[in-house]
Length: 217
Image 1 (tube, helix red, strand yellow):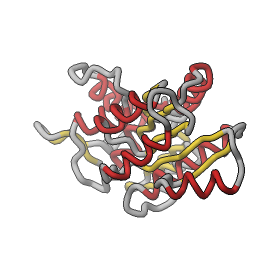
Image 2 (spheres, rainbow, N blue to C red):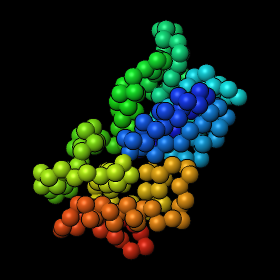
Image 3 (cartoon, helix red, strand yellow):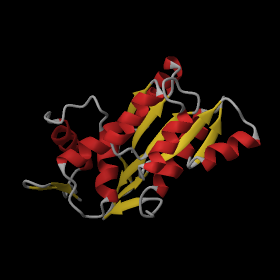
Image 4 (cartoon, rainbow, N blue to C red):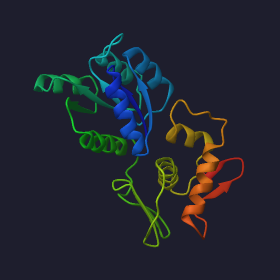
């Protein structure tokens, strides 16, 4: 999952980004509304976590612009105001969900995952290929019932491949979905992650390289 955190309080933004990255998400950060809109127009985010009270360009205007652009990104609006009028106003602008500050990180995470599921065709709760199973909610992978420990990036790569249901995912697509905007698209990060995955998942091999096209399970 790729997420944009648009929050002008830098400590809050950085704390959210660290927490979401630990969950295997690719996270970009914007500290003002203008930067948030630029990034959201450039990258295909699954969810934009949008603080309503942003400098330079108000969060309401960012949300309104994304909807005018017909962006596929889901918007989770954050606000210090918890009143019903604020909730209704935020949803009327086109936000998909609304969360009042302060909030528990676990609730934010659950809402993000729920919104991301709405961004794509319905998927089963547990992703499977043969004897391999991946449970996104529990962040767990097993093969033939044996738990497999993966890094957040390895988990995210495997999740993307399993979600594709046998379709080929290109190197560039994996970079867009799993790495943030600071990733160098010309590095071998994807190849190395796939190599580590193959080693950890064991035989028979699960991930196939399609020459000149990408990878599939």
